[in-house]
Image (tube, helix red, strand yellow):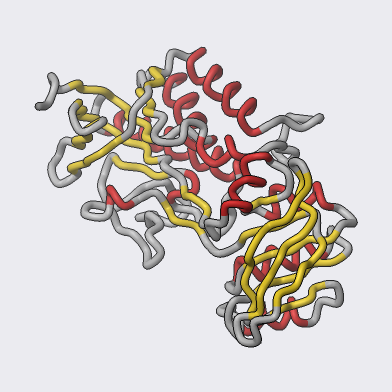
Length: 317
């Protein structure tokens, strides 16, 4: 049974760099934002041990620490940060309706969606173990490649993103071994040719990962199997990168917002944070399948808050 309906000016859904940046800007504009942290408070960055490429942190910062600081900054300007997640929305009328934890109903003048995207993993127990330990498994070469400078790494994937990340790693690492499950790439021809022509990238087709190997909390190698011959081999490496795609956390919005074929929310106008529903804006990885960086997410969080402010001003709020 629904509780009493709460009416707010600005609702922010999600608590990564995009959500908290939107909150900071919205709060400073006297929009009294309410932010729901969602299923993963702090977003993907909370699974990142070291963040060294976000401007302003000369000595680097851990992902969780960075999110604690962003939350504190948002609260400093009186953002109402709450536990809970959105379970239902209705954007069909003039009022934006949202339900929290299936019970609490909120009517929001503006909404900023910052629900992010979740990296896909192979699902191996050993993969998840070293991912949680932070000792060598990553889904972002641009984020974590630097930590493997001069070392040997393995990357799994066959699409454009996998090829792009393999090429990125090849400029940092001594050797990159690329594991492709089928006998060809899914990537565009130009991307596939780029990795094929890179001297320190070795491509193993028809190859699947059986186990990520390690000692204590550090990755030392990968056991792989050729799915045509059945041959099993071990590859020495210190870093294991998974580049098999992301799932944008947008399913709940599909009946009201325009999504692309992969499920990312589409911008109504390029260069803005607008969706096809007036008063609903999107920021961060829920709409970004290209960059997926904390700094770009924060930038679009700023854009979404500024546009929400302008939307309210035009309506005389």
